Length: 450
Image (cartoon, rainbow, N blue to C red; front, top):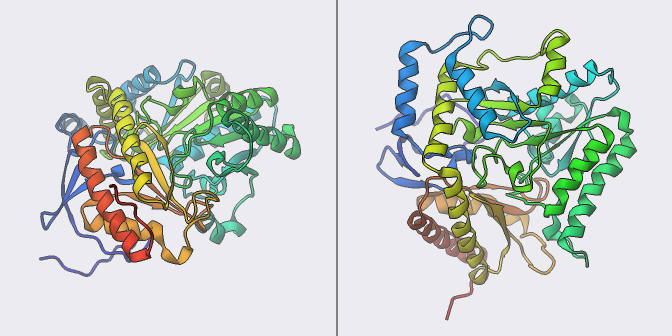
């Protein structure tokens, strides 16, 4: 028996049961009901729940020291995690700064970029171009770089406006261009925006290599990535990859940047980096950016828990599990299985208009018409309703409004990287049942196989 009264508040009053324990890809509530964690929480639990090897390493560190302020001591967990992170990221990214979460990582990346510009006598550079839609965090700086209207608009009077370009939503385009040409078209929007703003005022371009919550696992055409890198180099604009969601093996590479052989100037990481075992994030940057900042008096930034030995011991154990269990390659293989299953849904549910993603970061989007990609009527509240129907049946998925937060419905399917093919089948069976129930409620057609 539990007391129904709570003194906590979060985003809404939506009641949830008490969590009892986690086991692999499953979460079990106090009543004994089991849920498949089909979204890894908020795309966090990359190695699953209650991994005994990770827990043992955290407990070992707890017996030694849980906190040592970084200005007073170096710690082996933080140094070892930094070294392991550099070893797993593309060559050239060789300096690490730890934080506690994704918003902190994005803000740290932008602050490093600005302080580097100052060391180069480029004080006029302060604008950070990002994309719409996008998601980069909920703190004030990260929020202004986010392209998601419901979260941003209430705070607009308190924000310093930053320029935006369109996210490469080529699946919505109705033109005669090839995908390669479409990718270049969207990349050229960055060049146009830099020229419009004035190249000597633009500090950085911030992008998710694969879209997160705001665009639902959006993958640009291959041509987009290299051209963006070229444009940034042309104008001396720093390229920042927000890999808070995509990093730590989620997409079948340690960083999503590796799919296109791109080395950004700064990478922001969190979520799967600590995999839910501790609040942890990081930026990984080129030494050529960091050393001038340190020479000029130091990085004017920091958080109390940056480099916390307990969090870093958890992060180190997570990265070791990724390597020792071959989970990054497994994510790529299981991603292929999951993508086939999700695409097969389109044969039965005409209101699924697109399936996209890479590795175990995948999504599908609802539409009223596949030809025009018109979204479903807003009053159906489809993005919230399907989540509830799946939850009732023991499957956790993640959704957002697709078109800037005001319309459209997409659903992220991003289970832990340890998932098996049989468990994908179990997950898809529940998802199909939830889709059938939603279609019946909303009066939408379902095609039954002969």
